[in-house]
Amino acid sequence: MVNGTLIGKRVYLDANPIIYAFENPAEFPGLMSQLLVPLSAGQLWAVTSTVTITEVLNYPIKSGDSTLESAYRQFFVPTQCFEIVPVSVQISELAASLRANFGLRTPDAIHVATSQITNCDIFLTRDLSLKVTGLNVITPDAL
Image (cartoon, rainbow, N blue to C red; front, side, top):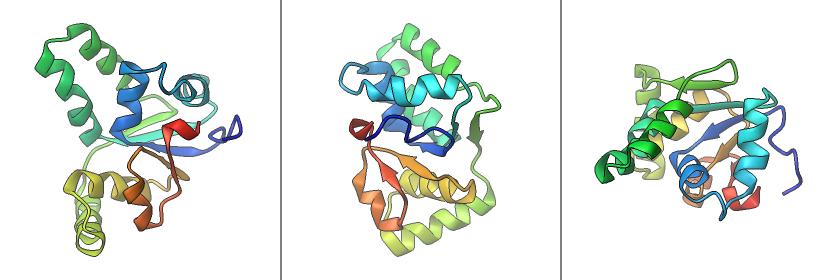
Protein backbone atom coordinates (compact mmCIF):
# COMPACT_ATOMS: atom_id res chain seq x y z
CA MET A 1 0.00 0.00 0.00
CA VAL A 2 1.15 3.51 -0.70
CA ASN A 3 2.19 5.46 2.39
CA GLY A 4 -0.47 7.83 3.61
CA THR A 5 -3.49 5.87 2.37
CA LEU A 6 -5.20 6.31 5.75
CA ILE A 7 -4.41 10.03 6.05
CA GLY A 8 -7.57 12.09 6.15
CA LYS A 9 -9.77 8.99 6.30
CA ARG A 10 -12.24 7.70 8.84
CA VAL A 11 -10.90 4.23 9.71
CA TYR A 12 -12.79 1.54 11.59
CA LEU A 13 -10.49 -0.54 13.80
CA ASP A 14 -11.40 -4.17 14.25
CA ALA A 15 -9.89 -5.80 17.35
CA ASN A 16 -7.20 -7.77 15.55
CA PRO A 17 -5.12 -4.83 14.21
CA ILE A 18 -5.08 -3.32 17.69
CA ILE A 19 -3.88 -6.61 19.14
CA TYR A 20 -1.17 -6.90 16.47
CA ALA A 21 -0.01 -3.33 17.07
CA PHE A 22 0.49 -4.00 20.77
CA GLU A 23 1.45 -7.67 20.89
CA ASN A 24 3.32 -8.22 17.62
CA PRO A 25 4.39 -4.85 16.20
CA ALA A 26 7.40 -6.25 14.32
CA GLU A 27 5.13 -8.44 12.17
CA PHE A 28 3.03 -5.44 11.08
CA PRO A 29 5.26 -2.34 11.17
CA GLY A 30 2.77 -0.39 9.05
CA LEU A 31 0.34 -0.34 11.96
CA MET A 32 2.64 2.01 13.82
CA SER A 33 3.79 4.20 10.93
CA GLN A 34 0.55 4.28 8.92
CA LEU A 35 -2.05 4.13 11.71
CA LEU A 36 -0.92 4.88 15.26
CA VAL A 37 1.48 7.74 14.51
CA PRO A 38 -0.95 9.56 12.16
CA LEU A 39 -3.80 8.91 14.62
CA SER A 40 -1.87 10.50 17.48
CA ALA A 41 -1.00 13.42 15.19
CA GLY A 42 -4.66 13.97 14.28
CA GLN A 43 -4.12 13.08 10.63
CA LEU A 44 -6.88 10.46 10.52
CA TRP A 45 -9.96 9.54 12.49
CA ALA A 46 -10.41 6.11 14.04
CA VAL A 47 -13.60 4.48 15.22
CA THR A 48 -14.17 1.26 17.09
CA SER A 49 -16.90 -0.38 19.13
CA THR A 50 -17.00 -0.99 22.85
CA VAL A 51 -17.08 -4.66 21.80
CA THR A 52 -13.44 -4.21 20.74
CA ILE A 53 -12.50 -3.43 24.33
CA THR A 54 -13.99 -6.77 25.41
CA GLU A 55 -12.10 -8.63 22.69
CA VAL A 56 -8.77 -6.90 23.31
CA LEU A 57 -8.71 -7.04 27.12
CA ASN A 58 -9.53 -10.75 27.28
CA TYR A 59 -5.97 -12.05 26.86
CA PRO A 60 -4.13 -9.71 29.25
CA ILE A 61 -6.75 -10.23 31.95
CA LYS A 62 -6.76 -14.01 31.48
CA SER A 63 -2.96 -14.24 31.45
CA GLY A 64 -2.47 -11.76 34.27
CA ASP A 65 -0.42 -9.42 32.07
CA SER A 66 -1.15 -6.17 33.90
CA THR A 67 1.38 -4.20 31.81
CA LEU A 68 -0.36 -5.11 28.55
CA GLU A 69 -3.78 -4.57 30.12
CA SER A 70 -2.71 -1.10 31.24
CA ALA A 71 -1.36 -0.26 27.78
CA TYR A 72 -4.67 -1.25 26.20
CA ARG A 73 -6.67 0.74 28.75
CA GLN A 74 -4.54 3.80 27.99
CA PHE A 75 -5.14 3.31 24.27
CA PHE A 76 -8.92 3.09 24.72
CA VAL A 77 -9.35 6.70 25.78
CA PRO A 78 -11.52 8.61 23.33
CA THR A 79 -10.02 11.73 21.74
CA GLN A 80 -11.11 14.16 19.04
CA CYS A 81 -9.68 11.66 16.53
CA PHE A 82 -10.60 8.37 18.21
CA GLU A 83 -14.24 7.50 18.82
CA ILE A 84 -15.35 4.48 20.83
CA VAL A 85 -18.98 3.76 19.98
CA PRO A 86 -21.29 1.92 22.38
CA VAL A 87 -23.67 -0.68 20.98
CA SER A 88 -26.99 1.09 20.45
CA VAL A 89 -30.39 -0.18 19.38
CA GLN A 90 -29.70 1.14 15.87
CA ILE A 91 -26.39 -0.73 15.69
CA SER A 92 -28.00 -3.89 17.11
CA GLU A 93 -30.80 -3.83 14.55
CA LEU A 94 -28.39 -3.33 11.66
CA ALA A 95 -26.13 -6.07 13.07
CA ALA A 96 -29.10 -8.45 13.16
CA SER A 97 -29.78 -7.70 9.50
CA LEU A 98 -26.10 -8.26 8.63
CA ARG A 99 -26.11 -11.57 10.51
CA ALA A 100 -29.23 -12.68 8.65
CA ASN A 101 -28.03 -11.57 5.20
CA PHE A 102 -24.34 -12.48 5.38
CA GLY A 103 -24.11 -15.12 8.12
CA LEU A 104 -21.74 -13.01 10.23
CA ARG A 105 -20.92 -13.85 13.84
CA THR A 106 -22.47 -11.41 16.31
CA PRO A 107 -19.23 -9.52 17.15
CA ASP A 108 -18.36 -9.15 13.47
CA ALA A 109 -21.88 -7.96 12.66
CA ILE A 110 -21.62 -5.35 15.44
CA HIS A 111 -18.27 -4.16 14.08
CA VAL A 112 -19.61 -3.88 10.52
CA ALA A 113 -22.80 -2.14 11.66
CA THR A 114 -20.81 0.33 13.75
CA SER A 115 -18.53 1.04 10.80
CA GLN A 116 -21.48 1.66 8.51
CA ILE A 117 -23.43 3.84 10.94
CA THR A 118 -20.37 5.99 11.68
CA ASN A 119 -19.60 6.38 7.95
CA CYS A 120 -16.10 4.91 7.97
CA ASP A 121 -14.14 5.02 4.73
CA ILE A 122 -11.95 2.02 5.55
CA PHE A 123 -12.39 -1.09 7.69
CA LEU A 124 -9.03 -2.27 9.04
CA THR A 125 -9.06 -6.01 9.82
CA ARG A 126 -7.41 -9.31 9.00
CA ASP A 127 -10.83 -10.86 8.46
CA LEU A 128 -11.23 -10.83 4.68
CA SER A 129 -14.59 -12.59 4.94
CA LEU A 130 -16.07 -9.20 5.91
CA LYS A 131 -15.59 -8.02 2.32
CA VAL A 132 -18.88 -9.75 1.47
CA THR A 133 -20.65 -6.84 3.17
CA GLY A 134 -19.23 -4.37 0.65
CA LEU A 135 -16.82 -2.74 3.08
CA ASN A 136 -13.57 -1.21 1.91
CA VAL A 137 -11.44 -3.73 3.83
CA ILE A 138 -7.72 -3.13 4.27
CA THR A 139 -5.52 -5.62 6.10
CA PRO A 140 -2.67 -4.69 8.48
CA ASP A 141 -0.11 -6.39 6.26
CA ALA A 142 -1.15 -4.08 3.40
CA LEU A 143 0.01 -1.03 5.35
